[in-house]
Image (cartoon, rainbow, N blue to C red):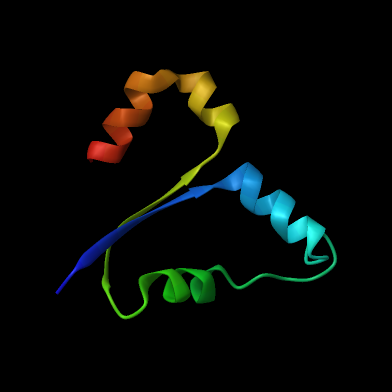
Length: 68
């Protein structure tokens, strides 16, 4: 079975959901988003990328986290 890793850019996702009127007034089901992205494939890993964290801890730590 094909395995998929999902990387989510938190800032861009938030802005798109905000533009659609979902945030801050409605809830959002992230598990449905992941299910849609998988399209029946197996989930290998998921990583939410938030740039403040990326720049705070640096590229090396970020890549170590992805490799874990």
